Image (cartoon, rainbow, N blue to C red; front, top):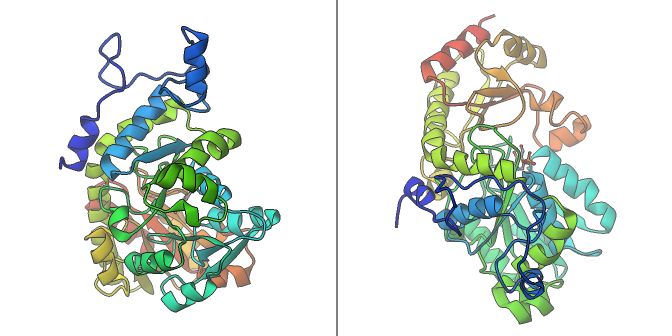
Length: 409
Ligand code: PLP
């Protein structure tokens, strides 16, 4: 088995380029020409792999998908317009009025809002629960449950659930296990080894190469028996484990229209080439910075699953090695102290997003979660004294020096 980067760099192209370009060219056209009507018919039926229209498929996007297939081992990969599009397409595909999704109560704010509001309007209930409590998860499942959904490391609570144990519950109840693995890229997380059926990724984050573009990925391991899915059972009988992919490509993804642009696919394909190196550095910075903050008198608490003191340390090691994401959170005495500290930073940027090449910091309560009332924020464990830091790939000494001067009263 080739290592991650070698695999990426040696993924073959579908067709040789006329000019022997080393990277897949950016095909930014909308439509493709056919030599005959018969060829065109076969393409529309999906019987030949030719492209017809770039919202449906595109050579540059296809090459990016092939690289993800090569590194994950998943037979079905669909690149979409954003991480939110990956989540929305997948959950809309599986659900129907009267169905329910059993989901972690700790989720990225927009995902939470999608489940709590957007999909609810179509009669789909989300049963939020503590996915670290296996009994609670199991008690929420019934015959209308279409998925168990959680993040590998929750953003920003940095909670980790036992995926292998959840996959046993998912199998028992014939429900797919779907994870958003945005915080743990494929260099450190092999989703299938933990029984994950579908992996959703915001490739905007570390895959894109340092926040170059917005994108998402739906990675279907082709392992679930879709005859058990209330909505896909007929397709499951016809296409077996490929039923999800069939419905996605020939209906939901195509009809929702949230495709990835060829230019983004080009940037994200380039980003993949350096993902391993960049993420390794961000993780190492995260370890160094969390250790520094842990001893600082102005810091009330630090959370990073890579710290031995974290309640998720052991589980993190088992699922992601010594790289349980590259994000940490810490608490100061008050909201005012958080704002003052943010305003004193000189190198670390006050910005949303994670896994940029630059270090980014945010006060989640007043930004990502500002639309939520205080009770909801409390339920999501987003306190007014919490800061989230996503260390980039700058020198750890320079980052620590910036934090040190900003933490001084
Ligand atoms: N999932 C997680 C864990 C995220 O952190 C984010 C964005 O921050 C998303 C999904 C949404 O991704 P995108 O912004 O690409 O839609």
